[in-house]
Amino acid sequence: MSGNARRRAELGQHFLAGGWLAAELVEQAGVGSGDLVVEIGAGTGVLTEALARRAGRVVAVECDPRLAERARGRLAGFGNVRVVTADALTLPVPRRPFRVVANLPFGSTAAILRRLLGDPRTRLERADLIVQEEAARRYAAGRPATPETIAWGAWYELRAGRRLGPSSFRPPPRVGAAVLVARRRDPPLVPVAGRRGFAALVQTGFRHPGLPLRRTLVPPFSYRQLRRLARDLGFALDAGPGGLDAAQWAGLYAFLDSARPGKTGREPVG
Image (cartoon, rainbow, N blue to C red; front, side, top):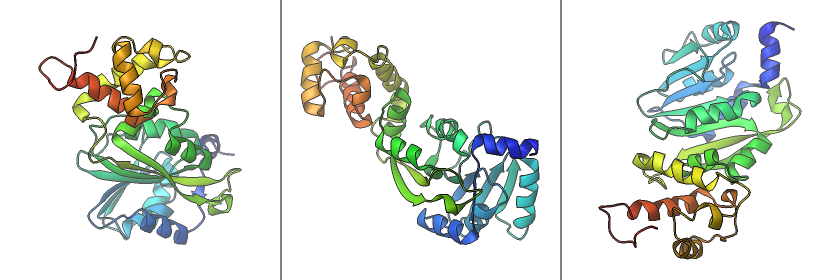
């Protein structure tokens, strides 16, 4: 096995079995002629070709130089595609609104999600990502919740889409896959300007993950405030931080934010 082949195996990289499947996935993603689409892990260009037939512009990223060269040959007849040999984890994202459609190496799923969803200031509008089915279901459910997935949920709605069996790939993986769809919320649960304050609140709640929120969030809330918020937002005071979803954390943050000096409408915090 060559070094690149070994690396692909370690990352869990499995290519789509055929162009017909790629075309169906691109159609189901709703890609249109006005879209700028970034593809991560282009491989030999099977999915890239389907994207090129529907998108306005495609930037296909492939870290393996030999695979990137094969993709360039396959896509030579398309004027709206650029194949970039680079690591998607370090490549700058577009400054204009863009989408991502990608068949991700299974071993890189978490790192790529952090890259795409970690900063709400980026112009990402939607991502359709083929990942392990178990991962797609877990991220879509937001369970178990972590500070990271709660932050993603504040700005993106995540859901699990189409399932793909092992026969959909070459080589076939040992497990099934599914499309994880991340769509930017409009409006977001938390304003982008509040991203740092929101992250700080969530980190406060998770500083002792084994303790209930009535212990970790008093302060910044008084017990009376937290009890009322628990009733209004629908969580138990004895819940741990991972027991709340992004919307409930956003409700807690909105209360704190409204009580900042200069804002009115809520009782002071503390």
